Length: 195
Image (cartoon, rainbow, N blue to C red):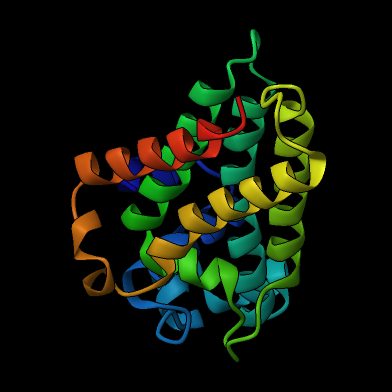
């Protein structure tokens, strides 16, 4: 984010945006209140005034970044005319590319500092899978509701997992074209025996 972009936002927005940026660059532990304040051009009192604590600021920053991603996904889900394979490609590429572009914020969104899953994100993913199921019902004629749910859960898991692990674990996904091919194969496999 450029300084000009930061200067045009409200103090609260500046603090949130800078916090998201710092979490990505240095992680939640090293994104101290002091470094956040300095990067946002505010004093520590402004952070306490707007958020109450670093923990609440980090939680809101993570929630804001997840809401941003969710808004995009909902756009793909509500697109008309509905084209399921294209929508799943777009959703898969969006999540995968976002996760690889912003790995630290992605991991922070999924897990609390103590390693426990962030419940709001888990609930959001369950809701997304349910929305996908609703949109997809009827797209795979030979597939029962239970099988569709399992297939979509596998698809969502396969998209969300790679950015959560160190990239050296999945070296074949190191570039954008490989990740696009990965999503294409996942979508193809999802539809393979259901038609």
